[in-house]
View: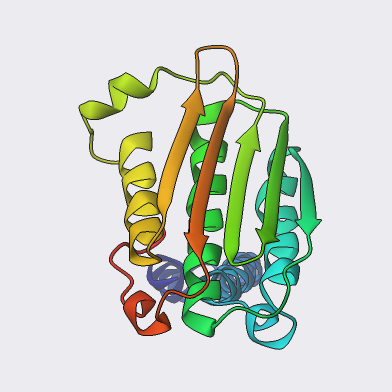
Length: 198
């Protein structure tokens, strides 16, 4: 925007006819910036999470995040017995965000499935893709910005919920990330968010 404004300033001193084109370009840049800001705000905490709950928020986010990459998205709803505490819903939503981001960046997948289910007090979240897969043992050497750091953040959030993360993957066979935790866990233990979504 600043470079564009400087260009307009210079154009007014030499060729006034070019100003209209520069103004049009700057308007497009401003519209893109506004759209990106709205998207970032919604990604941080979509209003759907508060208004309609975790299932609706995951469904919305999956479609919004994967559609530009032509990835099909399926949400299997093994209906939750009731709304989870807000910090728990936020932690699970963050896990889904990180999982889908990993898939977009690394999986070269064509289809993604998320399953959210509950049996008595045990809640399970699964994120599966049909991508290239990988050798989980290679994640022992974490690299900045790599898939390992995203999974580390997901594991941290699962542990804060009092649960665990299971990882199933092999080269050429896709990846499944599975989170288990019990709903009786004190919600005060999940108010901390150690990893921002990248």
